[in-house]
Amino acid sequence: MTKKARTNVSFDGLGIAPKTLEVLDRLKFTHPTPIQYKAIPIAINGTDIIGVAQTGTGKTLAFAIPVIQRLARKGQCLVLVPTRELALQVNETFQKIAPLFGIKTVVIIGGVPIRTQLNALKKNPRIIIATPGRLVDHIKQRTMRLNEVEVLILDEADRMLDMGFKPDIERILKFVPKKRQTMLFSATIPGEVVSIGATHMKLPVHIEVAPSGTAAERIIQELFIVKKETKKELLAKLLNQYRGSVLLFSRTKRGASKTRRLIKAMGHNVAEIHSDRTLGQRREALEGFKTGKYRILVATDIAARGIDVIGIETVINYDLPDDAENYVHRIGRTGRAGHKGRAISFATPEQGKDIRNIENLIKAALPILAHPELPREKFITLRGSQSRTRGSAKKRSKSSSFRKRK
View 1 (cartoon, rainbow, N blue to C red):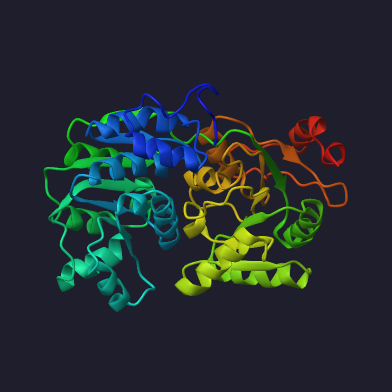
View 2 (tube, rainbow, N blue to C red):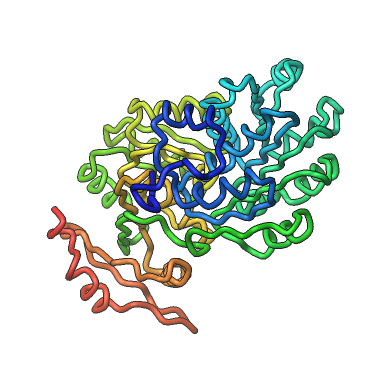
């Protein structure tokens, strides 16, 4: 687990019921992460929570434990998440504990026949994990009622708002009882998230175990300035250097498909995951990446929050994200659960401003490296802005050069 508070801290004393503690021991969950240590006792008391934590810090278990303990008595829980992949992964966490208490779960997402979901709903699941769009479909068709929901979880709330789900969330909230507990978890807290908290929560306790926008610890971050036409060559060299699992981010769906074909032609086992792929294709790609069938997974930002895989060695930002905050979410896919990780970003000479935005967010300068077999580039100066010079790139890469790391 990442960033343990202290090695002698355990789940004891957090208000967790004995049977749940027994299950946690069996699952080898011994030391709570900071978000778990702070959130669990407050959530068990039924208080509303706004939890801010880096990606990969155990947020799902921080709300799963209190939810299961509460539902052992009565009621339902609704968990809203931004993507299908995240919904399935949240369900995996609940499935480790909920069945032992006789609590059923259901996943309500697009890409699955609605009849399959209707059959699952007939079994009276107590935990509903859903993406907003598909849940609204059920509400419109009157195939689902939310009048017994006692706990509402908004997971990765900032991402849901980024994806334009605010109208759907507002609509869903009209069907959820006002007398409920609400927990909102997020890696960043933009204004819209604050607005939801102020409008739909009752005196929430604000828990922040890392400043909003903080990149995960134990991640080595590196930057290569490279011309667009040279990116393929640099990628080939890096994929040969780093032999572990690689998650590579492309800005567009078309670019992801093109890059996957490029990597496959290099002789690597690779899959792609983005919104143009069917749910079955996305699940196969993710499962293949987890099991080692595919060493490399090419993804768009839909996967920046939806991939919970421990042991990803390297994240490569083949294209920089459109939004600086997505940089934090992307690189948070490596360095999870106490493991070390590496995040490598490619920036073209024209993208100096984008890099400055990222550095301002993470409050750190990205070390600039240069590959000894490729031309050394620099950021060009655009009108009304300042860029790093070739000299500064040399100065930065002097202490952590590509040659020294080999």
